[in-house]
Image: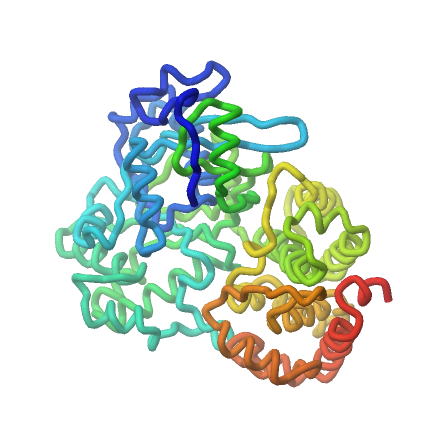
Length: 494
């Protein structure tokens, strides 16, 4: 991304320049140099900076507790740009909340250190093994857990996993770093840290526990047992729509707020975090900044994943096929908006009661959030890594609906729209780029299958045994045939 921002009228963001920023921009009121990194976060992207880092910034603004600063970590070559931006800005960045009512900017200071693992892997292990580190949080995307969806087992044969098993002191993957640090702590007689997944996975803590323990057992059974006995893995549900930062965002931050920021983040006003209260090494008083602590996250997770994330897939595929670019444009199309409403209605009977939540009001809020024109959320973000998202966001509801003999029309339409999308062309004949680790097999089967969904439904690591349901296969097939013949808009009109 090339910002091409003239810095003549802007102020380069860093610690020294905070006092010169416009008065309407909230900046950290606490001494960042007094903070201890009680949290190490792996996978610092837009979402972490608009969500967890914001909650911690709010906490540090109002509390005298200085034990919960964040040390950010990037594991991937892709994270180099984040390293360069944060290092040039003393780890400060601008967060802008955008809605039709206006834009509000603030500078977040809760991240005080950023480590780029390819530069120095030992330094990352040391940060994780540091006695001050008491919580390790993760936003590593659904694909980062090496979890085989069809079986629920650990993907032990993945090249990253094999590398880390063979090179325990030079890891490249998340489990390699976590086990190296936990082993160091165990050898030094230090207590472990809590591992808190903040990714969109149902039972994200349970999955992190199972996968990390499986990896550790393979590397060192004694360490695996220690982790299983001593480390806690709370489940949590996170929610805030946070599109990828664009060159237009950098320009907006410079023009509206006079800040020259190499990597700001833009988000909607809505914010939610529900966390299972299960921390083995202490935690900040998160309730004081609006985090909902509970004994059971599961109903909240199901609500969010099955309503919001499933709707995002429907919007992403149908919207792309129809030729749209942004989520709010799709929501301005009455036919697709109605399809989103009907998908949510279809999914609702599969949900458990959610304490303190009015589901009808929640669904209305989702429609309003999707329609927010200021967020400029692009459809490719919603369609990214669909092979990992589909089982988590749609197929659980679908299995439950089949078991309940409930409606499956709009869930099947979503799957058919994905299959049509995988052919790599929209309804106008424009090319669609398929960004997915499984893209080769997906696109090959989509093209060879034509209007027959069975070649794709036969990929058991995604669909498990769903291809044995005649009702499901027939419903998806009917929609795929219609999408091929009439396009997205024509299918919805019918």
